[in-house]
Image (cartoon, rainbow, N blue to C red; front, side):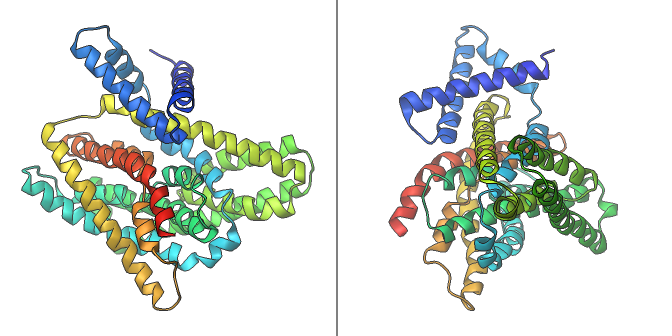
Length: 411
């Protein structure tokens, strides 16, 4: 059996090789380039296996089966990537956009979940693919939130206005946590329907969402005290690392939202601790450290997404369903973004073309795949997993590569 260290070594080596090839010969944005190369390598492995040349497909499949993508992302990489993303979002700018961000992260996610579920139920039924409505709701919950990892990786290189960057980043950071909570409630409804009541759902939302915010504030306060009482950049970088790893783990143990807690802690660290509790040397070291962590983990994650195609179940009829649902999800994104923003626009002005930019900038990524992998085994899980993967690949490659030109044209 391959050890965790061996798997990590292989994945890091593959990611580094793909990143080098992309930088040296292709020149695409690193994460997108790495994922495309990984997809091409996966396709090559599959073709060689059909031709009877070696067993690259088998070796790669065995490696990927040793990686629990759900745990690797949701209980491993996610805390680092969310903190690194939140670190560079200005809290003052975020407060200016709080109404839009809050609306999109709550009303937008819930509206999208219901609309996607209903559309998927009837569309799949028309294609003779029977999927129970509760599974359609789970699919709606996992595909509705934009992925903060994919979004932040794209937005950072676009050079958009500060207001637009804050809105896009803020929505993706917070609607991810809300989407995970909605998904968890629906998963409990599927597995233990007798436990679900209005009161239970309200308590669960309070524990996860509000508890995550409060715990994130506590982490920020602890970080402020510790960093404000010393001046040693090595120790202070270590403290930020402990806040992320220890804070995320403790939040999950306390049954609060680890993602939301880490985002709040990252916002406080980036806007308060950097200004009032860090020296210039510490500030530069913290920024360099988390930028490097963010870049490395992003490359590994997107390489893993590209390679995962080797173990994603496939049937020809599912491909048509996936392609049609790409269109459906984008159209519903227009509604779930447009309704809250239009209502807000009645009271205060919003940026021009905001609905168009947020719609096309609503990238889906590894979190959606990870949630799909957490579903109970069965044909419904395999169908949802394949459709989710198709939407994620389209989102990252097509929307990710064309978002920049669209923003430049509209602004």
